[in-house]
Amino acid sequence: MTSRVLLVEDDDEARETLARALRRRGFECEAVGDEAAARAAVAAAPFDLAVVDVVLRGDETAGLRLLPELARERGIRTVVITAFADVAKVKRALNDGARYLLEKPFGAAELADLLHQLQAEEGDFAPIVERALRKAGLTEKETAVARLVLKGLTSAEVARLEGNSEKTVRQHVSRVFAKCGVSSRAELFHYVFPS
Amino acid sequence: MTSRVLLVEDDDEARETLARALRRRGFECEAVGDEAAARAAVAAAPFDLAVVDVVLRGDETAGLRLLPELARERGIRTVVITAFADVAKVKRALNDGARYLLEKPFGAAELADLLHQLQAEEGDFAPIVERALRKAGLTEKETAVARLVLKGLTSAEVARLEGNSEKTVRQHVSRVFAKCGVSSRAELFHYVFPS
DNA sequence: ACGCCGATCCGGCGTTTGTCGGAGGGCGCG
DNA sequence: CGCGCCCTCCGACAAACGCCGGATCGGCGT
Image 1 (cartoon, each protein chain N blue to C red):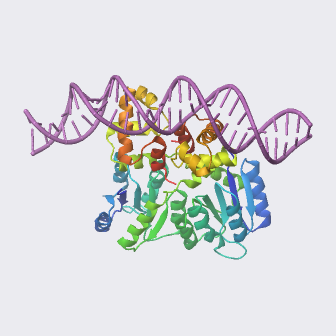
Image 2 (cartoon, rainbow over the protein chains, first blue to last red; image 1 turned 45 degrees about the vertical axis):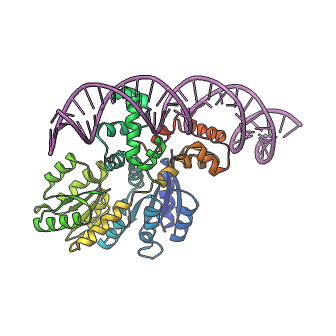
């Protein structure tokens, strides 16, 4: 339930203050002060969210260099924090996968709220389902049935909701499988959500 | 297979040129010139990607106003394009869900490559699976089994890969179900990928 | 040492799933 | 009209699933 947050901030006092504030608000927060420690942390354990200061130990772009690894490779939703936001930095943050930019000074409460928001986000996979089903070239009925199957319903439950016979639903599901090139519910899910 | 792209650009010539270029490169591209038309387009049909000019018909932030609707509500990965990038605009684009900022002038090929990249992205749900399994508090063996089940494998296939009996695997799967509060493979998928 | 827990295995039972063949009705198009 | 497509339903069957009781084994704690 509690999300794991990686905090990368070189100022010792600010780092510990923020880390404590986040922990008090229900996050499991690991705090590091430099690029190398951040890499070690993500390699050792999984994280849901990250907060990264752009400038680390005088290096003007150390935080930005972490973005590809955190955001792209590991799919960690990342907030970038900085005192001096110029176009080049913000643009790079955006283009390298950051999800939010927070300018210092900011309150711990502000950051916590933002993280809660990012946490809730990505909790809706409906658009991905719709896209996958559309690309399979299904008929209307097949799409409706597939939608419900992908919600975890059994053929009998779908039949009740759609006002059909269970056998009919099984037929539709079977044809959905054929069009998606799969042969079981599990494979259909994996077709929609590859990994 | 072909992704649907919404192009929002007020300059008629640039819009049609880009639209043609994208279509030639395999995208299904719908091009509109103002905010209202963009809203109508996304309401009428689903899109995978969007390209939005920040400035529309003299309105300095019309494109940015579309971001919450496109990116957040509908989960459309959106590229923002602009001739004059200032900190405020780029920051707002980032904070409202844009995935990339492209500064004019740019080539059609550049945009197409970028869209292809965004298209490929979000094709890996492994991090989401790991997060969901971790939060369920599973044992090592249960996690390993769950991972394979979520890849679409049957109990027998998992048993072969893990060197266990099929019955044993079914036991593990059963306990995974209990810990996740579900009672079927389909429900387990829907537990990991809510919608 | 004893108990507890996790991992491993077995047999079995009822249910669900996925597929096959067959059969009808509606609807649009050449 | 006939043809194709979509939706609908049925019976049947093998496979997979989910769960039950019961069993062994090793580690770990007090």
